[in-house]
Amino acid sequence: MELDPEAVRPLYTGRDPVHDFEHVLRVMHLAERIARMEGADRAVVRAAALLHDVRREENDHAAASAAFARRWLAERGAPPGFIEAVAHAIEAHRFREPRAARTLEARVLFDADKLDALGIIGLARLFAYSGVHWHPLWMPVGEGGTDTDSAAREFYRKIRFLPGRMQTETGRRWAEVRLARMQKAIEWLEAEIRGEDFEDGGT
Image (tube, rainbow, N blue to C red):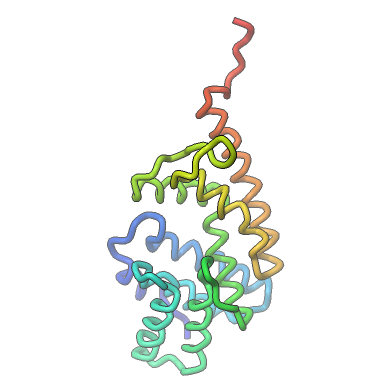
């Protein structure tokens, strides 16, 4: 069953810029590319990516989105085996308190979703999240700093460890590349915050 993204778009109306339909499309494209590299079922991966955040507002959004996907796909005549494969991938994509991914398709979705938290797009999402929740954009973190919620805290406490959590070889390779980009951008960002991005020239 080939799921059309436009059939899903209305389900994401009014979302914040961190988990909006553009995020869903980016995850779908990444998931399909990883699926080709790893030999996963592309149709399952595509459907799971398109529905993975449909109930993002729920406390356990992965379980709630999987339950929604089961109903929504069944109403559209999807085969039971396909439905369960999609639902399991959605259930297992959560970073915090993750459920074990029992299929390659679930591992692919997990990696695609986490890749969108890395790189320059990941940095943009960190700032968007800070803005939506009225957190400071950047605060010192760690010894001598603060644990105030901010884009910096999310990066140092979670995002920089994502490559080690990836579940496919392709996902791990790509995560390392995106993390390197992100870290370089953060080095420049922190220099600018301190006003240390220009040489004084001895004057």
